[in-house]
Image (cartoon, rainbow, N blue to C red; front, side, top):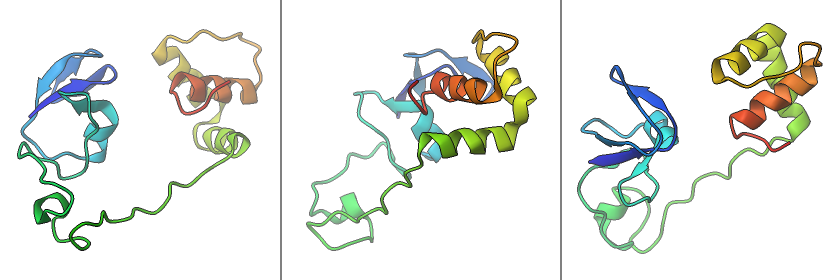
Amino acid sequence: MKLIAKYNVQVRGHIYAKGEAMEWDGPVTPRIIANFSAADGSGLFVGQTDEPRGPIGDKGALGDKGTPGELPLDPPPETVDEDTLVKRTLTALKREGVMRQLDDMGVTYPPNAKNDFLARLLLSAKGEMKI
């Protein structure tokens, strides 16, 4: 199936630029879902194949989950406030890890910036939070 890169990403030793097409024959994993979209711009789902999905009531669209005519419900995503997200980031990466990731991404920051600011800047650069 043909996939389009949402971001610059390396797969199987090749770096795909944002918007570049890739022919994919492997399983659709969460990593693929996070970094690629289908050739028509639609989203991907785990276990997706080249075979077209049937209508909602078709067993092919649901697999063995749910009953015909109903979509299986996923649990709602966990919502985390920004302060908690910043604290988790700092706990996991520490100041040096945050600065290293910012440097790798090419994001500039003042050398005397506080840890909280650096973590928010990193999360913003990754698109996980808006400043």
